[in-house]
Length: 347
Image (cartoon, rainbow, N blue to C red; front, side, top):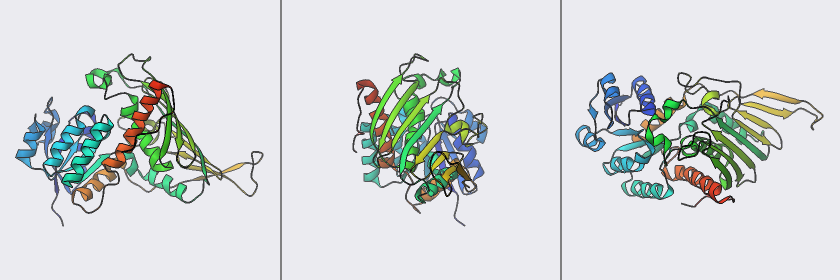
């Protein structure tokens, strides 16, 4: 039996705490330190050394792997420190706050060859695996339209941290980046984006609401609407059951509707709608339920990261792949500013 992977955490906020909970449940992982410049509470709770400076932690503890879950504007410099130190890295999304930053990180990873996994954890969800299987089976025929929703009301205390109200945050980069990544993963690359964005509901420097019109490379058309200032039941966090201890659940509600020439699929419910022997809108549609395998997205991601850190497999999403999702966020913001369709930048 292999020895436990010695892993450290950088960033002891909401996501960092979630990561620690999963780390403690895995026999093949040992949490060896937590770095956070503002608090040692999480390290004290779990009885591991606390560090204000993550670079000192890397030097003194020498972990084999690290999870980075600090504020978005610190993602790239922190990840570069870890890669330059030769330490396998799981970097929370978003990869970076800009494509310029992302390109710098991609260059460092390519030069060092140190494994890097980006934390778009929904890709590891068994629901997503089953949705991809259904799509690959041809049950929908040619994909025609895609509808996505992420609508929620974040508590006011969420914005107590200044960075949540400033550039580097916003519903596009914090929340819809997940949906854009998942729509890419399920439906294919997105060739063009049109968008409107607003900060009228909260009045912060960054948008609280956005509406996107997407054109996929395969010809499908899509819409994606998101807001952190709405009272609504439609969104992955409320619908998919990934973290019921944090988000109140509305499991009967879909957040993605994928419609094709031969069938349609609601996600995360995995309800597949197709005609029987007779086709056309005068005839009833038949519904079949998809069956995802057991498992948790965050657990699956952590186990995958252990394999990536040990160089047993490539990452399911590397920096270049995550940068393509970030390019869509930048395209959406540019489209909203300029009121025109925008093609995502090439890497």
